[in-house]
Image 1 (tube, one colour):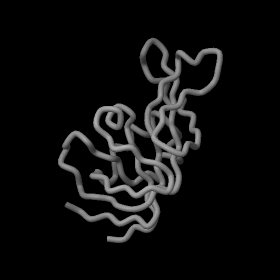
Image 2: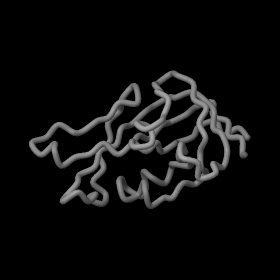
Image 3: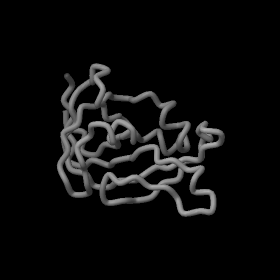
Length: 130
């Protein structure tokens, strides 16, 4: 099924573990779950921003819903504040990047920030359910 434009959440820990590098302008063919658990994204960024994300890339086999193919049009790295190791809900900051590189905001308390993942805009997207 042609989607044309899709937004995908990519968890940092999964990408660092076993993800293939991706970059703006490059092709992707990702196993994904459709309508990912909104909680994992909403706690990091605003509900409005998270609402446009339709897929989550899947590396560790929760029986993916299918495969999404297309071209990476935009990548936003997401970093969040941590207090006592716990995520500060809604603290996510986004920065446009050109590849799957981690990002932590420049600030005097940078050690309290942690790279959480990426929001990837995929164009010419086609989702084929598995």
